[in-house]
Image 1: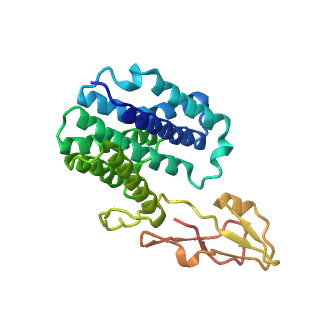
Image 2: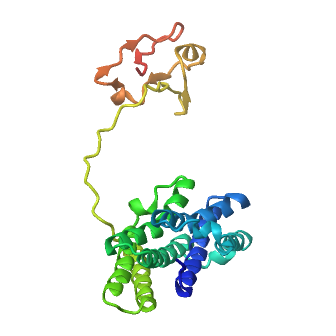
Length: 282
């Protein structure tokens, strides 16, 4: 079954935009040329490949049609060669990702309907087409995918795909409903980013702080001038010249308790007279 020209155009535009988001993520994470091109292709085509495999449209369009590969690599090269073009946007990855999400959500739903799937399956495949590429892109750069944590990511794709399916059920023009669905998805995603709209998150009680390993704290020698000299061991204390009026004290005298057990006082080293006993940290 051949897809019509309008659907193919939307798919290629979505491929280009999602490839821009993948390449921008690669440049942001300081990847080389190969890494940027891989991310651009993955972000642009993984969702569509998954959709085509699930509906039986094999060989998949991303591999059988040279235009998908060409568009993906072109977008990657543009971002790699002229990364300053993206600096004018506040968050280029998020903007291109939102545009690609909108276009792929409507093209995925349209293609599923063209292959005779039910309305519910068409909506689900539209969402999968929209989130698949971005999810794999985030995984490759070691980030939690946006679909699992971002502001109304999958929900926006769901709204766009539902608009296409509802329009099909009402016998409305597919092109018009595709544009409406893409605008709804794109607008909702951008508004959610700007206003930080999130789905509810489970409230978990914070775990109590755990005590770290015991780290020795050196005692402090305070001389006549008030200068602090740090001694790291008892041997160091014995080798330090102490003036007659010097006194040794532990600055952390109120904190020389570890796990509720006070430290035992230790006598001063040999040769250091008239100096009171002090305590070393546990």
